[in-house]
Image (tube, rainbow, N blue to C red; front, side):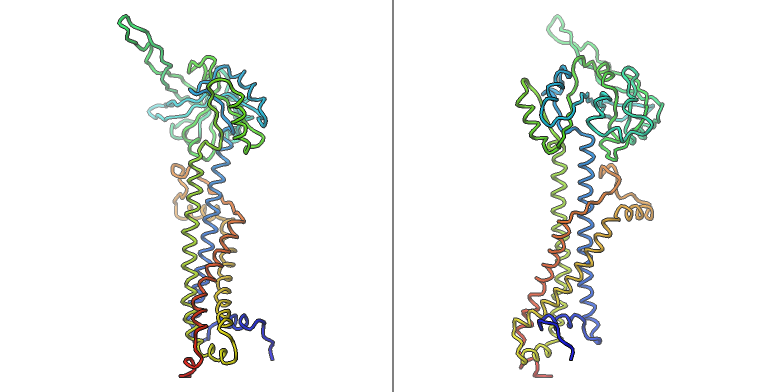
Length: 428
């Protein structure tokens, strides 16, 4: 005689997973339940990995382009930046500091005009703060910006919108720094209301794959910006790079405590904070919605197990007459439903991880097949999809799917435990 697995409830429950050959409908419902759970887990792992990758990609790009800490004055005009730079360099965790000038201007070429954020930088300092140089089209670099030559490096998308290439010139338009003459009657008259006009030569382009930079940012030399905007001894501020980005708040407070005067000090944790908070909220809501989808699939097990209970009433009655307790009958069907849930979860986790790791290739293939771009730069800021698989997310998804599957077995199992042997065998 073949030796049965122990305990008895698990052995019988596992044997019930495969329905009788003449009852293909129950087999189909069981398969549908497993497939539903697998698809739910697959989608949840893939989507959350894509959201994690998107968030990580945005954060990495922002940290490469923005400073860890920014020091300026309350009116965004910082005097004597060399002296101020020496002071902030003495702060703990500060590796380097670079001056910058930031202005909103218009760039014009022929009949095309685009609003642009001009960044005036010193190449020898700026390359130690951010990573813009690695995005500049070779063989150019930040050193292509030379004082007095009025060269400019444009975002790639901005250059395309203006219709310019390397070697072309663009005209910069900006309001002048206003000065006023007091009239005899006490009124004031602006001395010069004509805008600043200056031609710049395009020496290169850059591509960060973030439209906030690629379509609306340009770099010029700091001295050219000082001369053009009549800044004198002023710059907009200093950008700081730290040895530990998570010390940004501590460094901010330390510089503020050591400063005398009206200074404005910000850091990367406050810049674009709303964007990352909204991404976290979106991820949480998405998780809840997709868990409900898994829940719906898991509760298909309820109908599956109820039909099996109905089909197996005579078997249950015989088992009860042989001494099986109601609790053991419950365990029998809990085991059966749990195994179906486990199979669906395992398949979903495996396929979900496989899809998440190859999502960029799949999306690229679909874009070519459908001739449609899913990640539009003007909407999503980036055009390249990244994925990041977080082990904790996968574990939570798998445990949630298993928990919902087990929960779905409780009512059918309880119903099976209430089967009365005499009633079930009356017509057999």
